[in-house]
Length: 162
Image (tube, rainbow, N blue to C red; front, side, top):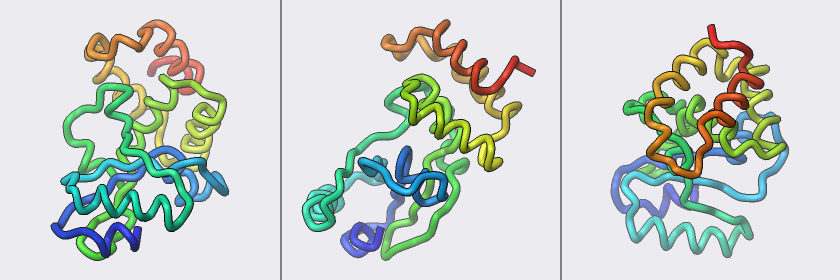
């Protein structure tokens, strides 16, 4: 975060997701990569990411839940603040979007992460169901998603819809 914040040439935001959120919040000790979404995505920051990958020997990917599931407008406001470094504000990408993207992907670690998010009170079941209901009509925009299988995973993780 310090490296990117120092490199930023304009005010912006960096949204962390996946394993980066898990490590920073504390339910996991490590992650294989750091997934980020930059706003704005400037050449200067992209070059800084490349340098950071080499200097810190860490894999950084430009990825967010919005690449895997629909994310309703307003996700920026729903993204908890982590802090500010230089000209960049850092946030955890909308935790409900993260949880639903993890349920859609359904890797063992993803399902464990959603369980940890529920257990720590970072997301709640009723609100997660409302979020799911909001995105369900938009699932057709993501042809890789099997809507029935996705809903079954959401039900398994969250219980029956309230």
